[in-house]
Image 1 (tube, one colour):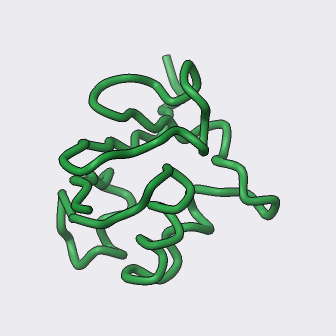
Image 2 (tube, one colour; image 1 turned 30 degrees about the vertical axis):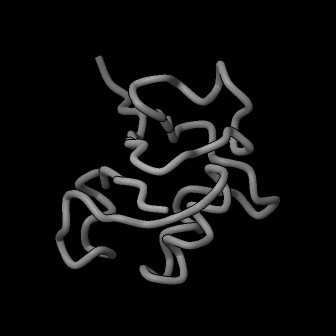
Image 3 (cartoon, one colour; image 1 turned 135 degrees about the horizontal axis):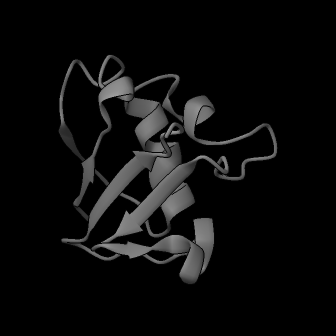
Length: 91
């Protein structure tokens, strides 16, 4: 199963400067686990010590916010596009 994952600029140092990578997973958390196997250290930047996605990290599946779905347990299918977007503070 190939899922297209858009990587934010601050995390691209972990993906050899790739803006987009392909990975697999049946759920968002499984996708993050698989990303971490390929790009060590990415999970600790996306998830807290309990395995929950950090509050300042927004994840979208095909432009739908997973917070309005099943969160980290949101289902993925072949061909989906996942965007990881860190919140930016300021004014």
